[in-house]
Amino acid sequence: MAVPSPSGLLRGNALRLLRYLVLGAGLAAMMAITVPGLNPQSRSWLVVILWCCLGFFASELAIKSLTGAQAKAERNYFLTSSGIIDLLAVLPIPLALLIGVPADTAWLLVSLWLLKLAPAVPGLALLGRVIEQEARPLASVFVIFLIVLLLSAVALYALERTGQPERFGSLPQSLWWAVTTLTTTGYGDAVPQTFLGRMIAGTVMIFGLGVFGLWTGILATGFAAEHRRRDFIQNWDLVTSVPFLRNLDAPAVIELTHKLRRLDLAERNVVVRRGRPGDCMYFIASGEVEVKVEPQPVRLGAGSFFGEFALLDGGPRRATVVTTMPSTFLVLEVSDFRAFTAHHPELAKAVEREAARRRGTSEEEPLVGAQPASQIPEYRDE
Ligand code: CMP
Image 1 (cartoon, rainbow, N blue to C red):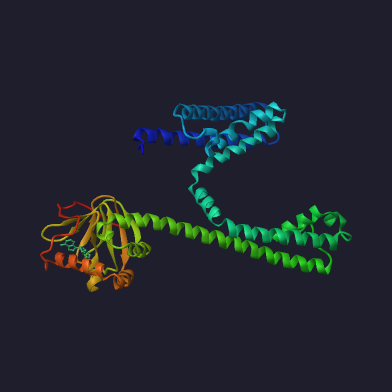
Image 2 (cartoon, rainbow, N blue to C red; image 1 turned 90 degrees about the horizontal axis):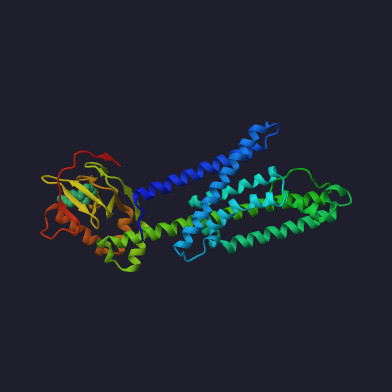
């Protein structure tokens, strides 16, 4: 994959900022133009601003489609979501003016430019995935919503049309009442007068609360599941990148992946401090730390671990450990360590062996990633 150069990134960011500025200017001009009593000169300036913004987006569209064609992109640019958004930003306004829509109305189409913000909102992609995953339960609740909506509209039409023909005189009017009641909006413009009508209205309101509660619940669990899935994939990659853990069998890696928490730290952060109680150990997925031990500090790199002494003997931390570069750790809490090593004694043995070597009671070779280090001048707490 091609990595963009720093100057390319800078240009990309500057262009994005310019696009947002143009978007903001266009929206502000669109709003200002609707203010009654605006003097003609200000109005002309606002129209000039709107045409300039439209010109900017039209040139952007032309450049993107040309560069896409030159690069012989696999998919036609106008069939991609950003191509469609760019087209919607440019074409409708001139088309509306051409077919004779009044200028004040045509310029309201500037609001379509807001669609350009969609790709910049990462949560939208996540929401799309959640809706896709939860489509079946969401659709089931939607069908329940439609059934209650239609049944209540028909019932209220039958019960109220003679008493209130101006409010419930047709099924569409009755449907309007059903929508405002089922969504618990309740404008109060149409209110049933018969006893039975009010009983139905009460039931519909309660159904409304239930339906929206169900939708919220489905979406919330969908979001939580999607987050868990994403964390699992990221943690899996990290776990399998630690050589010490790579030898575990697949079920053990899955179990450990659920238990480990990711921690990203910048350079010169204290990860553990000597003398403090310890309740977790750390596997280094990437980066490097320095263990402040005498006479010579020791550096541990990717694939190694630390913080096991406090877990094994329940005592305080024996050394301060500091990051020497931006690092990513996988953190295993003491309770999870105990639960995991109860099924997988091989991990406990390997950790104990390394701890014994570090205490100087074993002659074994150090595990991957350990080497003597020079002093680091300054550092700060995580
Ligand atoms: P703990 O005492 O919980 O916290 C500090 C950690 O530094 C300690 O666990 C070990 O993981 C690590 N550590 C201590 N001494 C050494 C050593 N000589 N070599 C490498 N790591 C060490």
